Image 1: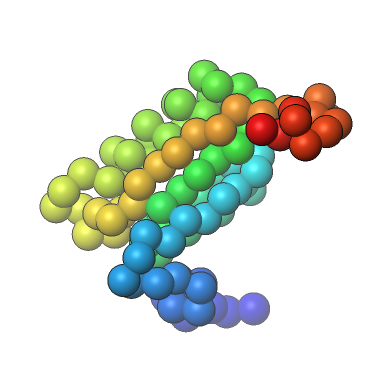
Image 2 (image 1 turned 135 degrees about the vertical axis):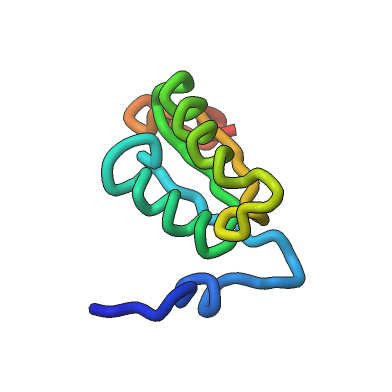
Length: 95
């Protein structure tokens, strides 16, 4: 129920390498809240969503915290992938 600060990063992160968290549906609601939480802990964030404009807007919001001098999000990088999983049926579609 209660998690210690940076508990997820301490469990899954690797301080010697860039550790990425992939969040599907990360441009809204709970997904976006998870993106901010994981970025705050030190993860690089990859958002997968259907709407490119929305992803870019949310990544920009996360990147505001990524500026040097802000220790909370200082090491977070971002990546956007536009994909609608309801439209992907084969491995070629994934590629």
